[in-house]
Every structure is written in structure tokens, then in C-alpha cells.
Length: 312
Image (tube, rainbow, N blue to C red; front, side):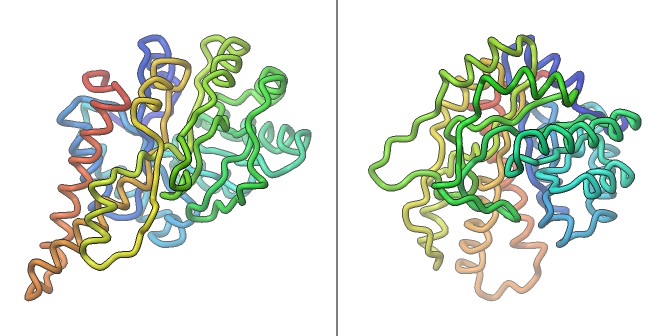
């Protein structure tokens, strides 16, 4: 099987009431851990590259790593997606590099400018059989190149979604309903809340259309505690409750972005391993342990949150 775009993935996910995990990748161990879990559970997967990943690993390495995963696991659908593309030029570069899906994020721009630029990306991508995701509304938080202050965040306006989708021709839409980027989504004592009323209204206005949630890591306490226990300092890291994400996956949400949880699992495991094995200097030892932790985290997300096991 070759890399696929997200069109058929989302069509099946919407019809059957589950979501597909979208995981940001930066190196070989992350790609291996994710795809090994998906292969064992027979789950489709979206591997994402952010601006930070493209700078760190270079587009060539990222594409070849993901293509290697396709060779290793030919029985599961794998899409390679650009996360938060900031411009037409970056989206075009990724299409030309072999990405099968791109996100153009014009959510910070005036509405009409967002529409015009998204449409431009769609026209180029669709000529190359590449699907396009766009965003309405702004999520708070910090993650790679995304940095939005709380007072600049805004929920998606359901009154805009039909006009936006009609004018742009996008294949999926990321909306803001209370998720946020990074590992510090809520303050201590603050009750996590997602605006399911907005999600329902959007889905009512766009029947059958795939919706995407960004900033949807649950920030698993086990790994936050592990990081802090072994020398890290991550006080008050709080994520989205997994039961809320599972509910969203049974509605119109067909793609859930999970990033911080993988980073926490990898970082916590490396810290623990090096503390318990101070004589180790072979990176295969601690990175191998980190890969296993990522695999376990993805298996958990597939079964507890996404509901996509056996859907490949």
C-alpha cells in the first residue's frame, strides 16, 4: 500500500463513529512506536509534521521515514499530513515533497483572507490528489510554532462554517470548542469543558463533513509524575479528559490530534531509564525504551479514545 490521503479514511470514520489519531513525528523512534501500535491493532493513522519537525528533521528525512513505515506495515492506511501550514508556499512545498494531506492555518487572518488563501491551497492540492484541512476559530496554548494567548483564543462561529466550506472546498475543518495546544490546557481547580453544543451545531450545518480537534492531548498524569520524579519540572500540567474526547469521536470528529502525550511518554521514559541506568551511554537503550512507551501510549489512545481498532 502507498501513502493515502484522508478522504476515504474520514468517510469511513464519520459513518462508523470513530476518530483517527493524528500524531506529530520528529524522528525514527516516534514513527516506529506509532505505526507498530497501529499495525498490531489494525488501525488507520495520520502521521503529522509541524513546522518545527520540518526544521528539525528536514522534509526529506520525514518523508522517507514515513515511507519506510508504509513498507513495514503495508496493511494499514497511513497518511502524511502537514500540521499548521502557515502559508500557501509551505503547503505547496509539502505537496511537492510527497505529503498526502496538508493543513493551511489562516485562523489568525481576517475571515475573507483566510477564505481566499485556503481556496488557493485547495486548488493546488486537489490537482495532486492531496486533501486539505483548514481552521476556523483559534485555540489557545503553545506548541511548536503555534503560540496563542488565552485572550486571543476564540470559539468557532457556527454561522461561518457553511460559507467557509462552500467557498474554499476544503476536505475537513478544525474547530475550536475548548481544546488548547500544549500540556497546560487548564489551570488547577478549573473544570475542563468542551463546547459540545458548538460541535453539534457545526455538524448539523455540515452533515457528513469531517471535523478535526487540535490540542486534544489528555496529558496522562502517569508520565507527568514520572517526569517530575526524575528531575523534570512540569507542575500543573492538565489535559482534556479522555471521556470527552471519546464522546467527540462518536460525533462528527474524524481526526484527533495527539502530540503532548507522546512527548511526555518519551521524555518521562528517557529520564527514568537514564536515572536507573547511569552507566548507559548507548542511545539505542534509552530510545528503545522510549519507543516502547510511545507504542503503549498509542495503543491506549486507539482503544480508550479514538475507537479505531480494527478499522484499517
